[in-house]
Image 1 (cartoon, rainbow, N blue to C red):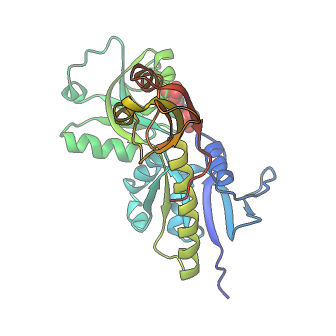
Image 2: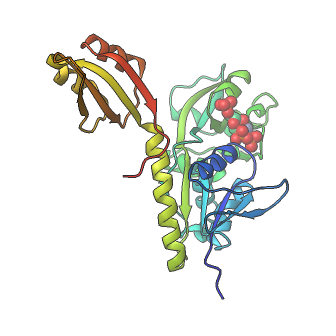
Image 3: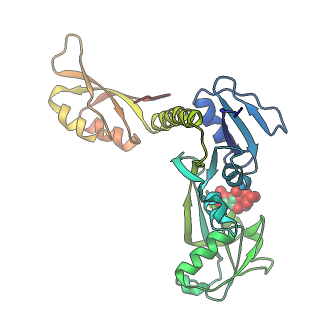
Length: 296
Ligand code: PRP
Ligand code: ZN
């Protein structure tokens, strides 16, 4: 008998681990994980969750131990560019999750004279991302020596192991502390949901259900519910500055003909300058509320 539960691989610990677990919780999936446990069964959804090292997630999904996974594009594309990349051809990204944003960048010591990519010709570059860097340099027609390191790449120039580094950057503080300057972006990355091509019909349905919830969570996070009072005369001007708004609900205020209440969902970021703009156009009592879930 085949097991029709859907199996998901997520990172055990590291940059995506907490956000991946949080996403599942926001999707209403509850699970109890004890320490050092490889996998656990969700209690209220036919989903088994495997906790693994992020580099291993593509192989887990490729071999159908898991049908889906949450992984950084940096890891996915690095594995696809590695010598065994061919085995991962059926592992495809299905949804960008919007967290775990970082970039893979080339960085040089402050005394390195850098004009453009040609300044790297013949240099030694330390990186964990051999596959991605190799493909990038080949595309640019530059020949370098690549030194593969598993971690602490940022110290390579100081200990004279390399002239240049190619590493992940998120806040930039690791580079700054190590006297390195970012010069080129090799890849922009964020977490994605991946799947293989071996899902049973039941698993496909489960993935659809899960995706609907994930999309609901991520649209809700970027959306806000706005309530404000608008002078009837400036209603059109106010509507024009509401970011990504659908048609608003206009409500009458008791005993007032000159002012209306406007309620609307905005699908884009609502920042202080948006609010100042609304106020300048005559809006008052402006409230911006978070939305927890949304099903369209
Ligand atoms: C990455 C990268 C840097 C750091 C950059 O390491 O290798 O060390 O993050 O982040 P920052 O720009 O915010 O300083 P990661 O935490 O992914 O783990 P690692 O130890 O495996 O390199
Ligand atoms: Zn690091």
